[in-house]
Image (cartoon, rainbow, N blue to C red):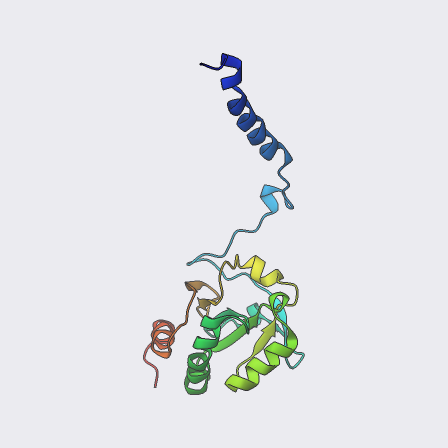
Amino acid sequence: MMQPAHHRLIPFFTLLLGLIWIIVSRVDTLPPSAKPEAPQKGFPAPDFTLESREGQLIQLSDLRGRPVLLNFWASWCPPCRAEMPAMQSIYEKYGDYFVLLAINVTNQDTPSNVEAFIREYNLTFPILFDWDGAVARRYGLISLPTTYVIDAEGTIREILVGGPLTEASLLARLETLLGDLP
């Protein structure tokens, strides 16, 4: 037996009303003109100021004139853990030629875990704390680890999402910025 025509339209109208409700009730925290776009290759790296573990404020724009590797990480992230020895190695060998900034996404981590991580891997490069996640959001972070390769003029040359990065892959990226390394 066939259903009356109006009974067959009920699912259609239910879906239509649901779609209208989703559109009408959507909440944007920022107007479209105020939403920052995620940084892109070939464009300037967004400036920020973060605190280092020594309490020093480091501003990205103050580092112009030197290439920067900007690495977002967390202590609980397995690929982050796997790539830190390579980061430390290239920093020890070539740290005079570039700046390595490791930004801990601290709103997803704990200071005690970060300190244990630094000790475990004997990290000597600057560790910065993104306490509220504002810099990670500004950079449109979607995955950990994420590394930005920034040239001496402050332009993003490459965005490496995921990991772990090897010493050879990090060195290859540095060589594109610096030429032949000793």
